[in-house]
Image (cartoon, rainbow, N blue to C red; front, side, top):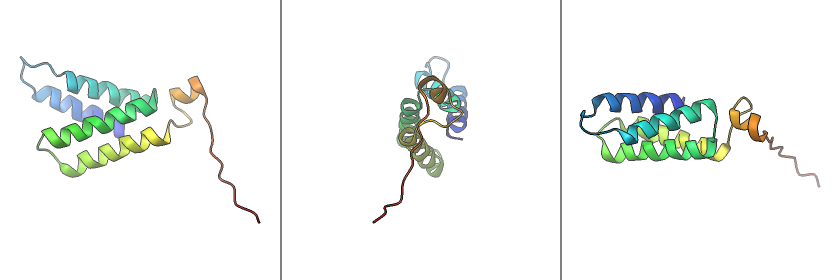
Length: 104
């Protein structure tokens, strides 16, 4: 969801830009959204998605709730890491965290 929302936001901002001004930030946001969607470099792309959402929150007068939600999802994915079916899991392995009960 976070990757798709970032791609959609980047594409809509890229279409709204002036022809003389290159949309480097929007293109970088689209690339970060694609990386997050396929699960490649999840910690880095999650941080980038969170940073682009916060940047959009500060610089643009858009929907406050969607920017905050997108930033929170990007930060959460950066901290949690990739899922089982991601490219990161295939390339680097997927570790499972098991929390054991304390026995006295």
